[in-house]
Image 1 (tube, rainbow, N blue to C red):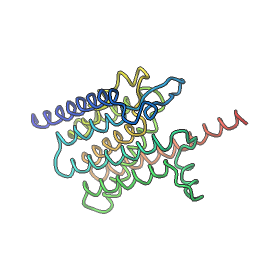
Image 2: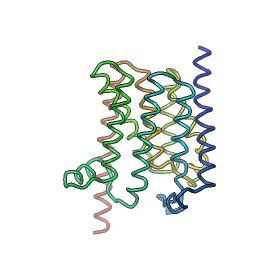
Image 3: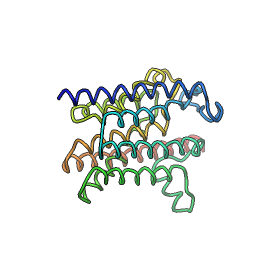
Image 4: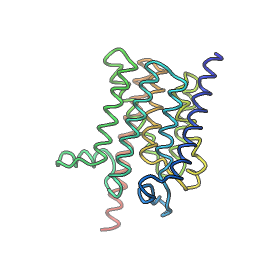
Length: 259
């Protein structure tokens, strides 16, 4: 029991320390120039994206420090891959009005590979690979892949206002602390940048939201059997479908207002 508690604390602490240090270093260095990192939020305020790569680094550090074997490999792979796909969308997808699975898949059918489609394909593939590292049977590998990719999408789906994605990570990760250290890593990482996120000075963006969600997905897989995986997979698919519907309705309403 004591060893497991130490592992969770280690993951929390490592995630927080590395994320905080990474955020501070990026703000000082501003690699590529400030324009690369600046966005306008829902309220029209300028915010930076430094928190995104910082929480990716924190989540990886926390998982590497407190886990081992398949859990560590799956967590590191899922976080890095989801973070990279999210970072590509943060940069290449800036200004693209399309959102939701339907819009990007529709563009793909028309021969256009959008940044959102790259993100969808890349994170799904990473989820399946990470799931294969964690499970032995084919059906469990597939369910694990859905859970990891679905969790990555869910956290990004709620990232519409300051602090919401961070709050989701902390709330969704809390039950995972009872089962292992994997969930502690993203919780520590996002807690480190929470004050600036809530204040509207920074945002984790697609980079951080997808990476943190993927880490939570790995924690769910590591702590559940087939029944739990099936329940989580079903819930995440329903959440994704509902979110896509809401996005489509909002996009339609916005188009009608500007018609």
